[in-house]
Image (cartoon, rainbow, N blue to C red; front, side):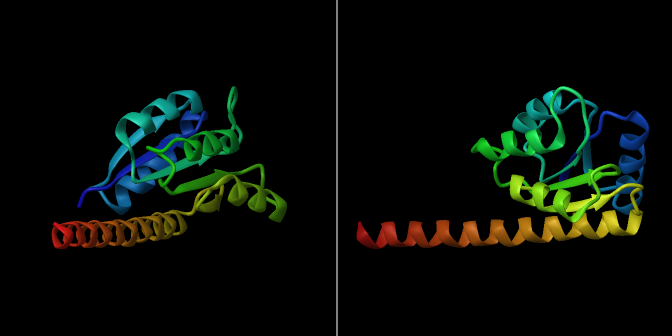
Length: 148
């Protein structure tokens, strides 16, 4: 299965570094990019990526606010989001990101092996979630047929 990843960072250099790491780790991924959190909301709603990696410190809407808005929408609420930051590095920052709805947290400068591991973890969770949904849908269909 081909997975879609949305990378959001207002710094073009950081955006390209993350995208290059992802492409090298798995060229099968479809990667969407945005240097604006406002645009990222639209991209996420339209493309429904499997994983989102977002920077924390961005103008107009920071990464925390982006996560909160994504988690409020039915279409995007279940997408795992990895917070990437080179500024907000304390345990309190980690706690804030997780409480906002981040799935995971990675510090900049990005380590390619760590990034690959965190994406892999997010995708594994997605796979389990989808299998559980398929199983429940199958059970509901069987129960409906049984009732009829």
